[in-house]
Length: 140
Image (cartoon, rainbow, N blue to C red; front, side):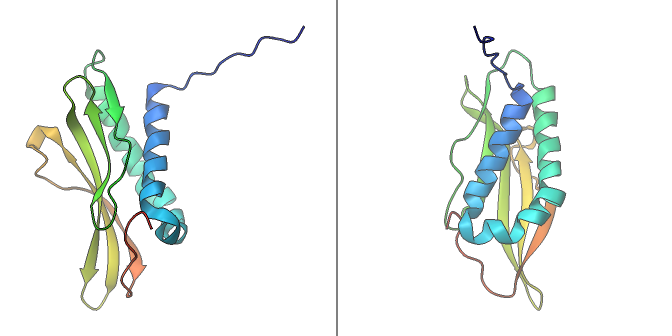
């Protein structure tokens, strides 16, 4: 008789981190993703990981937290939000904005907003250079 399979349960942090990465690449689509993936993995995502873990660790352990299911397309900044399932209120919002800098070209500015300041402040994660050409829309 074969050994019973043991189900491996991810930690909640790992679930959020895996979901965040999946949603980011979904937002990038097949046109942007392959171009920026190396820099995203090395520079940007470790900071997103850190911000998610900080949020999960500072929230009341009795809260039921979740992550949004769909990033914004076209020119929307939204990558994903972490929110309280009971109140349906966001705790942290992760965004990427396309910036055009004269003479330099286009950059993707990754940042997040937190509920503590009413989502008013930008907490910069980092920038990735695209090119002098206009980037495609998100999700394309």
